[in-house]
Length: 385
Ligand code: DIG
Ligand code: MN
Ligand code: MN
Image 1 (cartoon, helix red, strand yellow):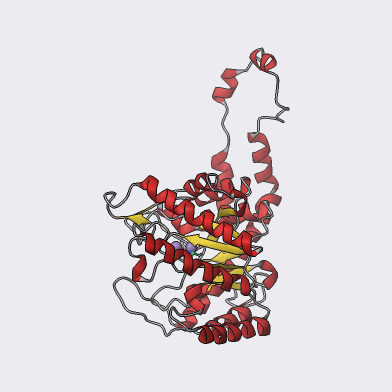
Image 2 (cartoon, protein in one colour; image 1 turned 90 degrees about the horizontal axis):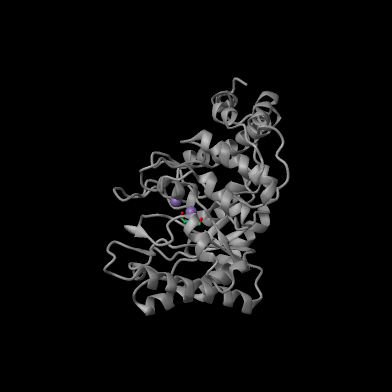
């Protein structure tokens, strides 16, 4: 592979790749070490990602406007940011609130036991929604980074869920009152930074959404790393959200099971898992943003950060090409057709089914040739097919 040659895997805005400002702007701090890279100005991030072929950037309120900034400072920052967006054509499809850095959120934001903190979290989110809408966002992500416990003595989980529901209902009412064109995407995570987090997986979130006052305004933002931290197959949770019409956004990255949230470059740890996720998004013709919520290794300098960004998009496009090859591969498609056991008919009436005779001996004896099917899939991914 020519590192930066013209081989058909060059990202372009129509591919709808987006990055959070916090991803390529990650300075490399970790719980055991200080930042290793200088901070990047949001305008510089916009310009460089545009050069690399991205479609847009996403942001937490404080990724752009520092906490405590005056109204005049905020307006100046937003004006300069909008200028960079205008100069490059970059968009801001999604926005979100940082409800996890301020020490006030140490016991959670929407589910803090202190009602004043819950109210402050809503106040901060209203302002952040206004900012996101001003920048053109139509999706608003809520990731409950601190919504959890280290000890269940702190709060009854039913109460915490009721507080979370009240917050989301309140925010939906606000968006309706402002007539904003905005939908919410709830992002699950099983743990970290809290010992155990409420609404731990995309499945939990989907069930929760149907208990809200305006479920039609709320979907999910599944993150690959977060479902993998729970030991789950990411494509299955995404498929359930897709099928329910609730896949409003997605966070793509990489993650090894049984570890802290690694937020690795997409596809870098599990090309096969990434392939089946891309297959799901492409086969379903899902129109959403291909958003990366990930960051470069702490070992990297600024050049390495841009290698990370370029590699994220390039891997997606290579896998997208592999999906087309899988779908066009005659032997793979033949194996899938044979596994069907012939064409399934329409739903039958109860009595017809009761009187159907099955050749159970044959059903018990048949193989599905999935070993051959998976081998062909692996050979396609390994580039020998
Ligand atoms: C972490 O996975 C979370 C935060 O970065 C942000 O709130 C959300 C948006 O993608 N993902
Ligand atoms: Mn993550
Ligand atoms: Mn995320």
